[in-house]
Image 1 (cartoon, each protein chain N blue to C red):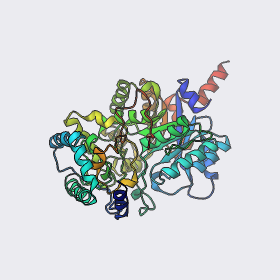
Image 2 (tube, rainbow over the protein chains, first blue to last red; image 1 turned 60 degrees about the horizontal axis):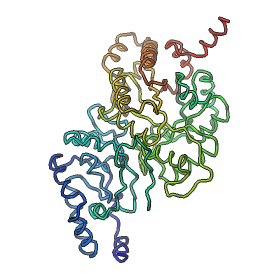
Image 3 (cartoon, each protein chain N blue to C red; image 1 turned 180 degrees about the horizontal axis):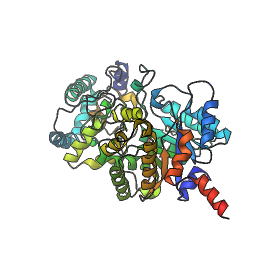
Image 4 (cartoon, rainbow over the protein chains, first blue to last red; image 1 turned 90 degrees about the vertical axis):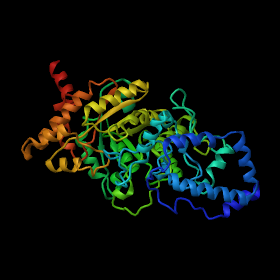
Length: 185
Length: 312
């Protein structure tokens, strides 16, 4: 495990400096996105596959590159490494110029325009529409914990399958009992 | 009575806003605060509002606190500081006795006087409320390190019930309440039906009992201000058609008076909405006219006290 980690950290991070956050209209329909979710959701098969991939640095690089290429096209992915898409209507919050993970700011224009890029629609307006269309608006009520900026450039699918981002969001709306913001390291 | 006690007691509460000066003296701000003395319960000290550099909100809050004029509410945005600086400033505020805090995402640097500045947004507004609660209730930093002692805070958040997606706005406010918000100030309320619906949705979510809502009220003072606010150039502000028509229907010299009348009507109306704990006056720069506005709305407590004492 250790050599893999060292190898990863010496790679130049293609993170936030490379591309500014700009709202991106998802190229994949909400219906299809939620269908694919069923396959990508952690299960015994992809957990095993993920563990295998992580054993070889080359396989890991290849897999990460494939994830980047596809998600860049489909969702404007910037590789934060901690994908929130499953609970944001598959509209990426890291395209929000303020990178807000818990919903839209108060500056959304009357027609749903982003305040910073008025020719683009707010990613949360899009996300709420898409989630609502699949009966998943309740997902947007979960509380999102802060991004770990060390993970930029990593494969979020591998992180997801290995359970490294299990605590990225709360299980529910957190109203019944106050959720802890801190998670065990 | 402190802001927190007042809200807990269910008294109609009035907050206002002061923006710190662009300069190394708080004197001008304190003389504006003086105009509000006795009329409002607490005053927001804005954090580089509109991304324009001003005296910092914590220093402004400390100056107002020490002056004894009004209780300050220190605003804190996510725009300029990462989680290290935010937590450190929260501890500083706690140490200096600043307990009322109001958290928001903050305007994007693009709109300010340093458009080339790096937008930080390391935490978002919900996470920042959550952080402050963690410091207070768990006596720990986000890292898990222990705090000795933990700060005492009264936590506030903001919401704009009028910005799309409006169907999501109550849920978003509920997230901030779940994160620890004890009071919420809203964007300008001009659209009463939308505001009333949003309040009802908060009721349905069961969060009204645990969070006080202060409805944002502004005064359109001139035809120019009307043009500006209805141009769509001010992030998150929309003026409904009927109000625009009403203001355009009067002579341009009378727009200010009509604007104050509208604001007074809005205060009187929102007061009747279940769950509204008070109003937040978004009338920075209008301090002189604030007493008159409160009289118009029938919520001027200085006058009421006078009447009561005259009656005796």
